Length: 251
Image (tube, rainbow, N blue to C red):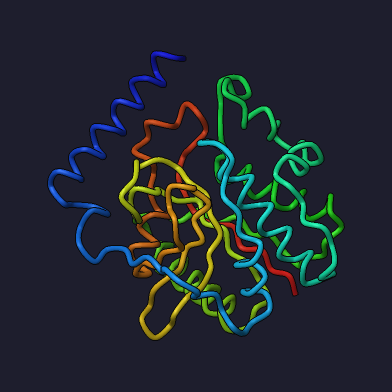
């Protein structure tokens, strides 16, 4: 297992180096725009709450923990503004689905670290239940790069992004190839969506990676490309078939 992990690491760093040297992928000029300064939304209570609750992950495999706790705290803040925020260690102790805490350890759970998309959706649903937060639906959506259903999935995603941004009755958690969006390794990553601008067709990601110092926005098609990654099938042994998103409808 260690040999396989080292070979995968070599592959990912080699691909990263190629894109960096050639100026391709996320290294291409203009592919990503970082939002420095005070850009937090001044309206839409749910958007305000997710920006306020946004935290960074505590180690390289814990992007799911930071993302889910950000969502939980955002909804708790809306429900009770005086509620104490849930910490990342607290949520790992209380939500045991899928051996979540063990997956965050150096050795992982049976050698597996992080969360594939289906398990991420289960953990989000169970986290809302554990903390007594109401929701109407948690939808786990795989986003194919090709195929007959691709057009409908893209249309639905854009509608949900627009509703999140304008109506404020839902949250969207992205499970994506981070290196498709920003200059980073092409590995599975999880973060909440922070905004969608229908005029420019750009999506803002509240990246929980501490190396990403500011939120950033990318074109919708770039965002979808990151969601639709099959992670090059090198991670199938760890349960990572493809990316996608989790839509949390609150009302």
